[in-house]
Length: 432
Image 1 (cartoon, rainbow, N blue to C red):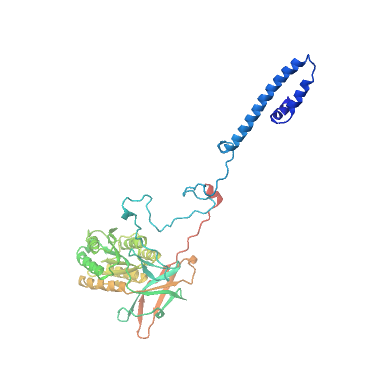
Image 2: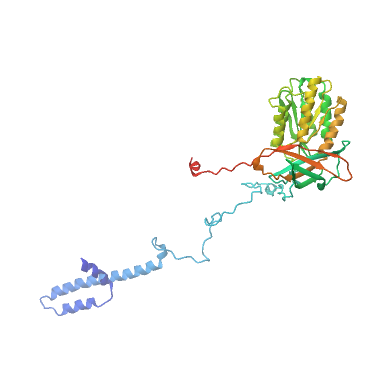
């Protein structure tokens, strides 16, 4: 089996093997001639068949070589650069970083059949970062102030000995101390800036006869304020109600003031704390003010005066103006109310007013509007690390050669917020 298998390929070669067989047959004896001839014929047929098979094999190999690419087991030749097919555009090389689309462009996943809907939107462009304390107006009408994280902002109103506003001071006229240590001012601004403001009106039973005059005075204040102010209205008795959210619409604010249901007790401190929260959560303008109008002392709050003041200071310190309608009130209650309102305003940089009659309320409202619109904004970075936390006492003084003694109204201090620690996730936590 081994020899035949070995010779089988040789039968396809064009050598002289058949000649050797024929020579052997021709010299054989006579009696063996038939057998030899028969064998020769058989051999000839075998050789003829072998020759035909050999030729067929050669032709098959040639054909296979020509039609090679059609064989599934054959490796196709590399295509030329000209005939190489293009890959789909959505296939990306995973070895290269993915290109992130711009996030400041508004785009629809499915184009609209209306061509005008596919036009680029006129979105507010990002502001170029300004200097610390600089206020910029965006295209959507919102004012923003560039401020460092640790920068302390003080809104200051300056009056002379006669109580008149001083409006011509410069940065060099101000000096700031924190906990008795001089601070370096980093920003200074003096211009009529719009504010986020909350107007809180006492709606207890004792205010029933006073509400019409109070509402008219508040409306006058709104008309005398910056037209771009955003204001909300809170009516409070034993509970505080937000009767109008932030808006610049005078008519909407007037409707909020008209929601009167004078009854119940006076939860003044709770209302101030709730309004300060509303300012912190929804006020979009950096300058913030609260105006409180009441006719008596608090007698229903869950918070006390100290807690209410601390809440205001913790939330960035909006300036609180108060108007106490204490005429005709019990003398002892009026005194308690006066002390509370004066302290609330003084600690936050505002001022407390105590008109002698309802006729004076309108002029006081106009004075508050002027005071709010004509303030200085000073910024400084505390020399004490914020990580120490705690309460910081602030003092601001001003001096100018052409002015006599001047008084600065600003908040008396603030609570430094400790930076939130960053929690490093452990491998064990990531597996849970």
